[in-house]
Length: 129
Image (cartoon, one colour):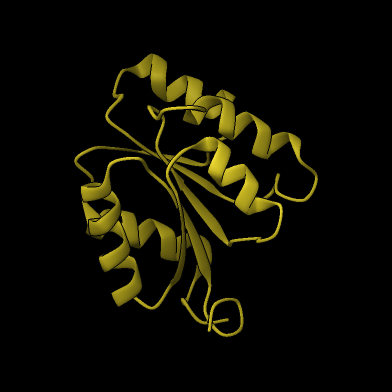
């Protein structure tokens, strides 16, 4: 059951293929998952849920990742949740901007799932609470 025994990850990604791959790998690794297609959906979900970590795409419709990250960091309730940017943006400027907006880590697409999972475990430890 979500929220009772397993650590939770919010995936904010508008590309269904990427989202599906992330969901399959993380679920098989023992994490419970929430999903949002864009920043607005993510912020609405965060009003009721408090995941242990957020995977956030940057280029999305409606509200992109930069604004979403900024709002998560401004909210007292959510500001300490680790945020991992998962994006096709790869310039040094993008990486610096991610840190300025409060992202903990940045992963460039296509993501090495083993590296991502290793970094998630370094932040969360076991998927079980």
